[in-house]
Image (tube, rainbow, N blue to C red; front, side):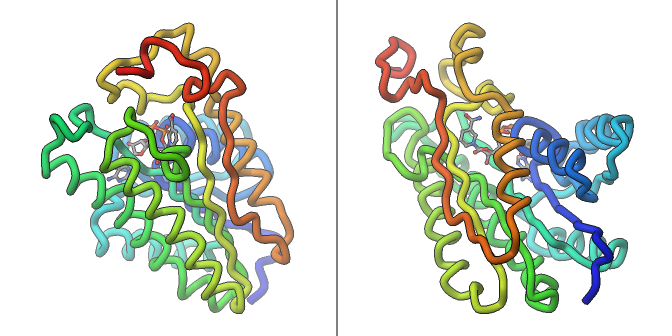
Length: 253
Ligand code: NAD
C-alpha cells in the first residue's frame, strides 16, 4: 500500500499534557494527526492550534474504555485517511483516593478500564491496518511507576502501568515479524493537568523543575521519526531533579 509520503498518527489523550504536546510535535514534523479524548472542546483547541501553525489535525472525541467506540474511531480514521502509521496511547488517569488505606474498587476499576484496557483496545483497533501495511509504530505512555514501585502513585496506577510495560514488550515479540514496533515511554514527573488529581498537588516551584509536556512531545516525535527497521522498545525519562531520589516533604505523603 502506497502512502505517497502521508503519515497518519492517532493520539489518545490528545486534548492536554503529553498527548497534546506529542500531537503538536508530530504535526510540525508533517504528520497528519487525529487527536482523541473525552473532552470535545479541549480537542478542538488543540486542532485549532495545530491548524494555525500550518499543520494537519482533526478531532475524534472518544472514551478509550469503550471498546466498540475505539473500533469505530479507528474505522473512521481509516475511512478518512486510508491508513494509520502511528498510535500514541497517552490517555490515562489516577484518582485522589489511591493508597491501600483509602482506595475504592470503583477507582481501581476505572484505572484498569482506562490505563490498561483502553491501551489494549486501541492497539487491537489499529492492528489489522498496520499488519496490512506491514508497517506501524505504537507508543504507549506508561510511567516511571510502571518500572519502579513507590507509594505515591498508589497500587492501581502502579499495577496498570507495569501491565502496559509488559503489554508493549509482548506486542513486539509477536508483531516484529509483521514490521510493527511498539515503544513503552515511561516518564517520571511531568508538569501536566494530571497532577491536579494528586492528594498533595506539587507547588508551582516543584512543577517548574519537572519534565515539561514539550519534552515528551519531542521524545514522541523522535521515536516516530525512526525508520521502520528501528524498534525503540523502551524509554525511561525523568526530571534531572528527580523527587524520587531527592527527598522532599511532599513525596513522603
Ligand atoms: P493529562 O491529564 O493532561 O492527560 C491525560 C489525558 O487523557 C487527558 O486529556 C484526559 O482527558 C484523557 N483521558 C482520560 N481518561 C480518558 C478516557 N477514558 N478516554 C479518553 N481520554 C481520556 O496528563 P498527562 O500527564 O499528559 O498524562 C498522559 C499520560 O502520561 C497518562 O497515561 C499518564 O498516566 C502518563 N504519565 C504522566 C506523568 C505525569 O507526571 N504527568 C508521569 C508518567 C506518566
